[in-house]
Image (cartoon, rainbow, N blue to C red; front, side):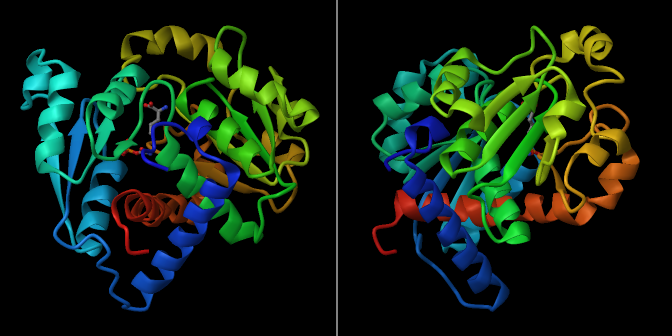
Length: 305
Ligand code: CP
Ligand code: NVA
């Protein structure tokens, strides 16, 4: 593994190895065991979109690994004034040991990897959110003690989260069931990938049907970053249907956990009642961003572990 650009690039073994390392780093942190695997190293963090979790967990994670992170807002970088990503990649490769980037087009992340000479980590694009899904899988495994054979249900927009959950879930042996409205399906590349998994993958329009016997329920906002001007139109499509609520939860297994990548819009994609009933799971998931991303950085940037 040279980069983390999308989960489609990783083997099942590589994903499981990252989850195991994430668990180990979490254990070490909780027990005060230092793990300075990235001593003296620097991670550049380029943000073209807002972030709370990604920014803080990467920055803190890098510090805990003995290194340093630099927050690089695209407003301040020359990239924001049109300097080509090809040049930015070659310059930053001379200073840094790795780059995390959050942006719009997946191609920009792929270009950074192609033209730079250091590991690139995708911190969210319109296409996918691999770091989030590693934390999600870590959380599901913590609660259920396994992943293989479990059913993951996602309700809502066929967006970056739906894409990454489908790929990540199927790769670790889960069944993945999505409920998305017509016109808001996941990316065709992801649907093509999922086809090979036969009836382990399901895409329907009815949330109650998708949730049947699910072990883990998942949802995300109806309008993602960059889609703000579509939010009213999207509301009319999603409202009252594409929501995790009591009715949908009745269809899932009685011990199903509920996850949300956050930020959440209560009473839109999830009711406040379901959110609060499952807040421990959701905030464990947010915490696991830290541990899962530290595992990614260690695997990509350290030759020691
Ligand atoms: N879930 C997630 O990526 O959160 P932020 O947008 O706050 O980074
Ligand atoms: N789909 C959301 C995820 C945020 C973590 C977005 O892209 O805005």
